[in-house]
Length: 323
Ligand code: 5GP
Image 1 (cartoon, helix red, strand yellow):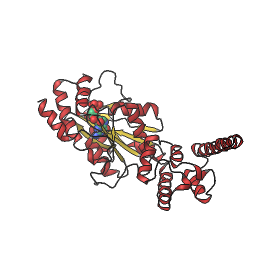
Image 2 (tube, helix red, strand yellow; image 1 turned 30 degrees about the horizontal axis):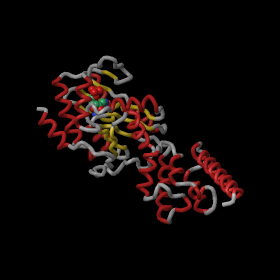
Image 3 (spheres, protein in one colour; image 1 turned 90 degrees about the vertical axis):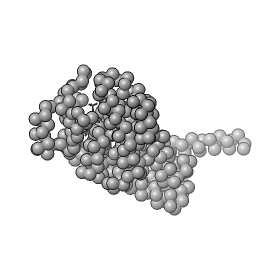
Image 4 (cartoon, helix red, strand yellow; image 1 turned 135 degrees about the vertical axis):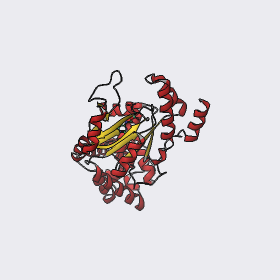
């Protein structure tokens, strides 16, 4: 190519990239919907929008990191390199439906449950979300157990006596409650959750398996996320390493963990807690996904696994080995 043409071509490419960046900015700032960009691409075959990659467009949406974008593209059966203008008829229909569904849920508060075996790091992931994603309300539970060193009333839990817990149940003030580890009672106060959802804020509940099941029954739209340890060995290491429980209490919690791991297929989404920040991001991303994994109650076995999960059998073997 003659030098002068090469320079002209490179200028054209730079201008096109700038134009696409400008379109993405309008979506990012909320001035234009992603659906509108897609529709323009399909109306005008040689426009800026048509040259934009689908992955680029999805990447501008709030809560969609690269991993979620790849996930969505796979679900829509669209190759990562595809440009909007190059989509086939069926792909356009699938993308249009997905974007419409997303637009209808964004702005409405969603209820999400984060459960998982003991010591998997639910508290750390939930705490990270509380500190870094103020748009999500982390519900503060009520418990009859005593505070651990460093725990504060109204921050980590509301610490109450048995009589007060009974009164809350009687008044219908608890969305769900359960006896955890055959020891203390824990419950989710209803009023703050309902107020947040009504105002459009999403709510995260960090609760045990039975609590998750109760929420599934009472709120079928809730998204149930199961936090997995990278392996059973790592779970044991985290539990023992924490050093906050007696040997007897540790054994009781491992028994609960074994039962809880076996229930992971009841959940909509599985997230591996290999890194607190990454896992928290993945959980928050799920709040922005249409359907967010929520499914009709009772449809077991459809949870999407990302990494190999430690199976209940593996847990069983370990338990036997460790007595
Ligand atoms: P910990 O005593 O270690 O703070 O918590 C023990 C367990 O209680 C954790 O598995 C936690 O998820 C669960 N839990 C905490 N709050 C609630 C709650 O409000 N409801 C239910 N069902 N479980 C809870």
